[in-house]
Length: 240
Image 1 (cartoon, rainbow, N blue to C red):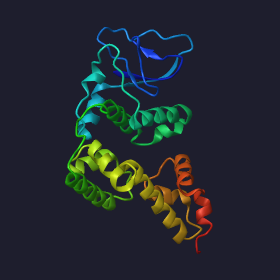
Image 2 (cartoon, rainbow, N blue to C red):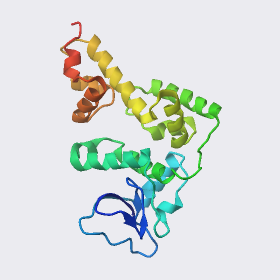
Image 3 (cartoon, rainbow, N blue to C red):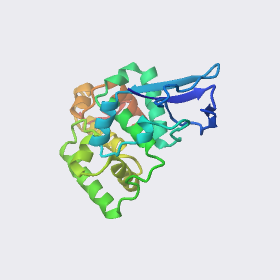
Image 4 (cartoon, rainbow, N blue to C red):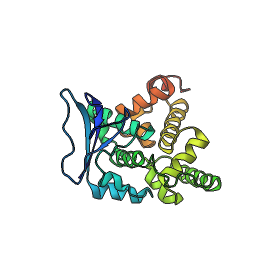
């Protein structure tokens, strides 16, 4: 198992070195001693099977970060968008147990840990614009053909032949959001369209399931977050 920590309060140095707020601390030092916490120290810790993490690395075409599995004393992973996504995922899983039912949350969490570990590296940092454009086009074709499925970013990477990092950068450049957020908004928009154009007698859960949403509580929160109303309010304005 590989373990990382996300400090919350009570600690501002790692092996005697100050680190940036929001950083991730790898706990896998060869010495076997990771550190001694100060009184009042609070943190999230994540332990992921190394085999599973390596499988995610290969599936998403991300090179393996050696400093994650065998860090030098005092090594830490700096704060970044991906580190914040890991922290948010840990908060959600701690405070919202049903979120664990989402089919791809484990691989998503693992990939964000890997991406955070690559923030300071130059791996796949500047693929040519033509490569990014082709990746987006191929991804959109695959998404359109599987729009009612809970498609994962790993599946898109496999179909497009580019890494998660390249795909993420290409989508952010084109749409201002990453591929996972794009997928979610597309599917939520599909639900909204169906609710507005179908009979009021249609069961909302059936519509949500049709678009690949199975955890209905999280679906309702995501829908309201995007459209500022609940699915039932949308359906109430349908024509029949």
